[in-house]
Length: 162
View (tube, rainbow, N blue to C red):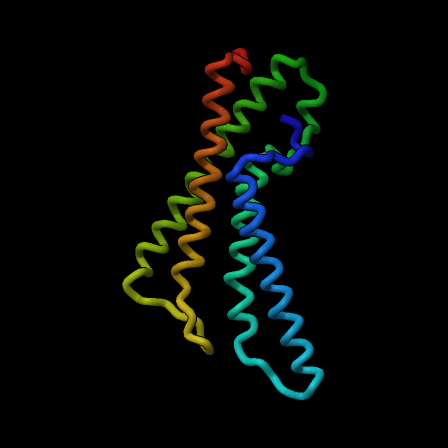
């Protein structure tokens, strides 16, 4: 799949809608806050409303980047290697990405579980923090599973020559 060609799968569409909605809501809240300040009054808690919207947008971006194989990559060393070694290191990079995402997901879930009984809330509006935390944990876990699936498929198809 071409990383610059959008995937039309339902998971991509869901992530695109979630991310777009998050960004649109964040922009709307911030615009209303700025307009209110210009008119002479303050809307308290606008940052607390924007934070979960941005979390949703970033979580969706992580899932979309994983689906479309569009994570940032530097090819400084691999561009000088033979195609066989480039494939091997590409697969190894996928495994390293899977492990990193899985460790991040495990750590975030661990923190979410530890803080669950505290019923954390934002300062001004008393919004619960846990839903945004669990959304991020889910996005990390989903990205790790997608990358693991891609690595397993490459290994089964024997694309890595390992």
